[in-house]
Image (cartoon, rainbow, N blue to C red; front, side, top):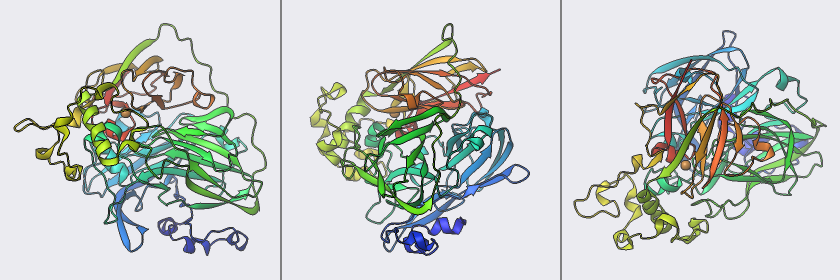
Length: 537
Ligand SMILES: [Cu+2]
């Protein structure tokens, strides 16, 4: 598909006219086509170019919404890489502010990983060279600009990485990009009265995350996809800043999970509901051979702030319209051989305690309630935990409409002359907010370590992501990992309990370009719930 088609895809009629006759019969004229990001492959010299740029989308009638994208107005291409092939990527920044491109899920050295140290100033180009040598996986790239990541992702920056290897090439799976192998990038947004993307990093979003009131799938609202009658491969990415999702088919047909963040599972895992955290990817096969149309929906989740309409009901995010064309007939019984876990004795262990300053918790909850009411509280009482003992008298006169632009002079809970509450370092790991200049520890290259990430004492959802590694989950929030979460992962759920992961770093990371480990609720990350660490040989 041509890039200009991708740009124009939200115009459903334009897309319908390029469909073969047989499929027009199933086409719903009022729904946009699922935009398919174009494949971008390195050239014969192993080079490719990414340009961060501004653009516009026509999401609302007669309004051009200003957006950011990579090689286009929104999101980016799907970069397809072959395991073991050297790659050189020139990243140009044509945005009005500095940014970075982090290769989420790739095991590559710290100096090319694209963390917050690797800023690209407006007008500059940074070229990174690396060789991805790890199992085939659906990964992604996104900005990692400290304090600005949430804003930059919300504006539209992000794209998929399709890493292929010999095994993935030989597996009998649907592989026709945009036809029976489709990306499903799920993101929520909020558009203001002027039709522009709204985003604020304030006490509320620093506490519970920034959430939207409408859903986009590959940048289109509730699009449709015409699929051959056979097995359909869906590559899900939860690209939301802060919203966890729970995916299902509207008619409850099973979803067969074949891959998690870092690659294929040993065999397909049959589910009817697939929870997916921010930053996570799952590849799923679904059988469309019965010819009946259905929706992929996201079911309501219990998460602070995320229970408001339209997310209080199953929300359709993608319509699947089977065509008359025959598709892939069979699903393999087994996929790849996952290595057994090594002996767990005598490993270097690390303890990471995730925490939020009580004052942020208090002010954030109050702001959430004031702005969105009890319904936003996900069933939590205002009397829970840190909320007890809150001085409600200080909260009076809070006008959250004035929060825009962060006028600290009008911050709630302030006495006359009191210093404004600075939430920018209010989320912490082991008592410390992220410090660009101070890596927290040094790991040894090639050695397994057991990391325990604790959310004890905190009720919030924290999808914890570690750079430079694909790990295995030993326990997840106090339980054994579910079958489809026991393979290669780079993100683990932490929600009030402990999670243990077995990590290993195969590349080096210096203090100058440290690896990051952080909460992938982007507003927690941007306000300090992140640490840098180094890897030495
Ligand atoms: Cu978090």
